[in-house]
Length: 251
Image (tube, rainbow, N blue to C red):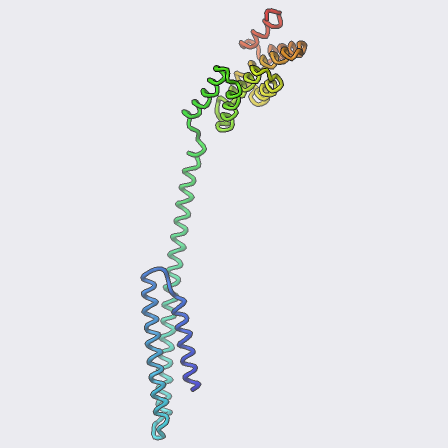
């Protein structure tokens, strides 16, 4: 009986190994199913042989020792088959894992390549849309819709921070505030032009606009100092010529 219990335990362990080896791959599934059938067939054969031995053991004339020896040999052979089958299951499982690992690595590589190609395109603004956005904000200024113009140019600066028109957009924000008689906001906007883009063609105009705001606020002396700064920093510009006229009292 101990021998029978040992045999059944071995066969149950093998059956558990077979059950754990189920794969998603159809070919692997079929292979595991075939191995499971073989294990079950071996189990039935062993049980039948063991039952026969038990029946014969009741007959005292039966050479039990000889038959037991033969059964041990057969059990050893079956154990060898089970080990081979277990190895085959492990091999199929490893092949499938390797396949999935390779596929996953290739998929990640393709995704990384696609993202690398998309990033420059996503970061490159459409020059047509950029031009339309600038012109739309400027048209609002020309129509006298100064608040809408400020909003349009601020949106332009947010969406196109690397545009060559950023200094001009900031200048027109200051000019729109000047038209709204919000002189403090106008001066702050124009000072940003001077601080961020001192070499821009709009920098002299920004200084001239600051002087205009100061004059409107009654700071005449400060306005004249700003005009002198304009002449010193940006001589020969149209804004500098206007500064000369204002200092001469022509305007």
